[in-house]
Image 1: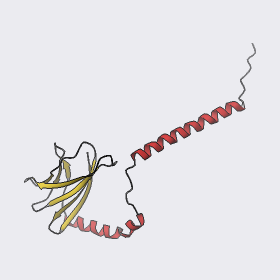
Image 2: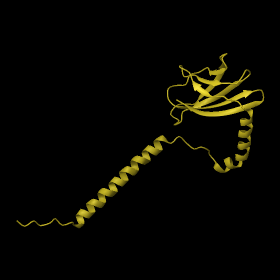
Image 3: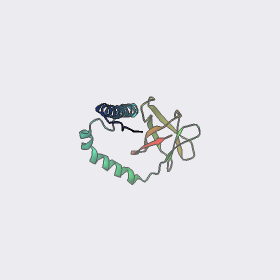
Image 4: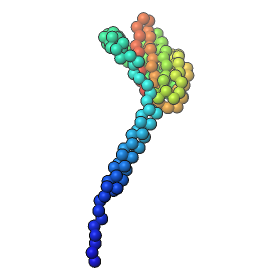
Length: 149
């Protein structure tokens, strides 16, 4: 019984190359679709202008740290944003942004609850939200940004 080995021809090579590049193109199209569907936008619109403000931002951050305010954020059972404040006379305002931009931004206003916290008057919808707040006491202020889920 004579077994003749199969020959690898040019057609075989063309099929291998076509299959390989078809898989590469399909994966690239899929990854591009995922990337463009989940991109939430830019951090800054103009990096040159942002670089000109960098030193001022550092000085503001140092001044904010020198206040010594410990103001952690949390969500209560009703999904209201809570800010623990270190004493009386504090006020807060801010906004909540959906990280992927799939929901409109929400403006947040706060009221004191009498237990050392400021509580948002409006609850956050379900999901992850980036909360950006400005906490004030007199002329001093502190800016916070935190993701809450």
